[in-house]
Length: 185
Image (cartoon, rainbow, N blue to C red):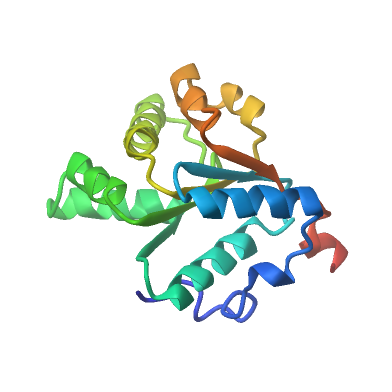
């Protein structure tokens, strides 16, 4: 697999051991890695290290050489779907189905896009629901990061979507810390 973080100095050597987790967070991550099913929903404020966390997970999966690790941030995800739709190479449903069949997925920055056009906003929510629903039904291992705490998702997505994220079989963890971009931590 090509590492999407290889060209970014701050991420190419990202490693979970370089993240300052407390014992509770380490226990939660360990349990998730052992079960290797369902969603690991990681949330925090801006700049705390969610994308670095994604890079560390991606690097770990690449180093294991056992898994294919699909990574996209929300913006890239939709840009790629728009491009495939415009080229008519695949339908949205076909692309979502391919994603739900991957061994491991990482979806970074859930809820970062906003749309003023109601049709685009509804399409965005429908496509994302299809991905989350498909992966949830198959218990596909998937890391999802967001600035939104799970309960805050109700203001952005419909109840059916939030229910799938908050499913008791999933793992939810809050990254703690300050905005590293502002505080130079």
